[in-house]
Length: 256
Image (cartoon, rainbow, N blue to C red; front, side, top):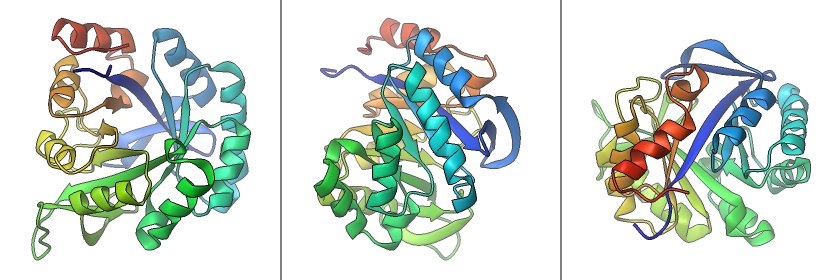
C-alpha cells in the first residue's frame, strides 16, 4: 500500500457534548469535544472528525464555538459535518478553523452543491458523507446498497455506490462511507460495501461504522480504505489510536 492509511476518531456532537449510541439511537454522553480532540491529537490521530448530530439552526453557533476552540488547541486536520447546506456554511466552518467540511443530506437533495463547494474552495476541502445500508424488502439497487438520511431512518432508493461515483465526478475530494447497518455494533466494517465503492471511485475512501477490534481496521484497509474512522471504541477506552496503528503495522499496513 503506497499511501499511509489514516486513523480518524469521530466525535458526534450534540448541543456541545460528544454522544454515541448504536445505529444512531440510545445516545449516551461521551465527554467534552475539545478535551477528547486534544486527547486524540496527543495519541497520534491523523485527523479528527466532528459530526453535528443535532445540526439545527439553533445549535449552529454552539458547533462553531466548538470548532473554534478545538482548532486553537489541536494541530491535526479537523473535518466538520452535519447540517451543512450551502457554500456559506462551508465558509463559516473554514473560518472557524475547520480544514475540511462534510456534506451529506443537502448534496442528495441538490447534487450541484458538491460542484459549487469544490469550485469555490477546492475539492480537498469537501468530504461527501454517505450513510448507506443494505437494501431490504421492495427496495432494490444494482449494488445492493442504498443511501439513507436522518441517521439511517429514511431510505432514498438511491444506489450508494453510484452516488459515491457521481459525487466524486462532481468534485468531492473524499468519500466518508458509513455503514448504517454496522454503526455502533462493533462487529466490523461492511467490507463488501467498501470494496464495491473502491472499485468505482479513485478519490480517498474513509471507512466508517462497525469498528470493534484492531483487526477490523486492518480488514478495512485491505478492502481498499484510505482511512479508518471510529467513535465508541476510542471514546470509551476500549482501544487507543496507538493500539490500532500498532496492529495495522504488524499486519503490514502502512500507517503514519
